[in-house]
Amino acid sequence: MESNIIFENAMNLIEQASTVLPDDVKTAIEKAYQTEESGSRARNALEIILENIRLAKENRLPICQDTGTLIFYIDRPKGITEKIIKDEIIRAVRESTRKGILRPNAVDSVTQKNSGDNTGIGSPYFHFEESESDSLRIRLILKGGGSENVSIQYSLPNSEPGAGRDIEGVKKCILDAAFKAQGFGCAPGVLAVGVGGDRMTSYMCAKEQLFRRLDDRNTDVTLREMEEEVYNIANMLGIGPMGFGGKTTVLGVKIGKRHRVPASFFVSIAYMCWAFRRAEVTFRI
Image (cartoon, rainbow, N blue to C red; front, side, top):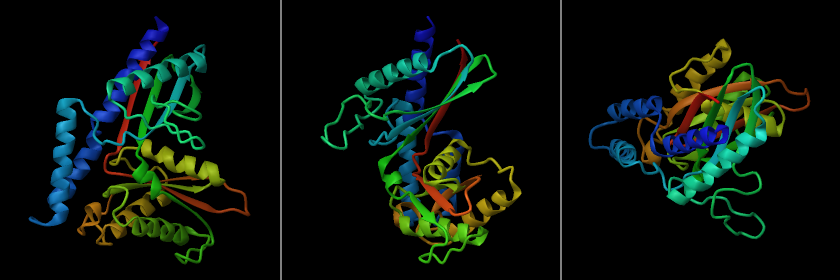
């Protein structure tokens, strides 16, 4: 019974993430559509995106043909082992792939063979935390390959964007990442940023920002001000939706931080496409 509950909730979660864009992201795209000039390529691109979103939801079909890397963050109650949860989610991933809700995306990097069911070494990705709650919380991000390709990490100081080891340097890195993307990665996107940590945890911090809603406000005043400033400047770059020009280059900027060792200062940007697929479910077992 316990296993079936986890399996069924995981199945519903995967379908929700793959086929229905979160309301905060859809609202941001709708606002962007109204901002762009009538008859412009930018407005036309956003119109097509909104139609894509509508059809995917109505027909329960994937929003994008690239259903991405599956990233699960799980808060588990005491007494429920990670293995039980992981086994049932993997079973749900395989079944969702069989049903066409997910595209087979897990490829062996040495043999180049596709596993055919989205499972393999490190696929899907799991992050577990034990909670005091008596409920199981599962959060899921589907991270497309195009957006992952334009993600980037900087080590400060960095001469290319002229970034020093300070807040201004961090801003320059984020804006440089937005400029380098040039509409690739399916703009307008979201810039999720990790400041500090080591090379691995800096990227982890960045990707964790993807679980935040676009309409939330950072509790850290300095980071909140940076998010707002970088968002406004990025949208003055003129890159626009799909690189066609316009007023909407990014839908949001989300920044987190981690302590670092004195010798290292990393800034990591996890770019997320407009098909910002995120979903979560909480239930008692």
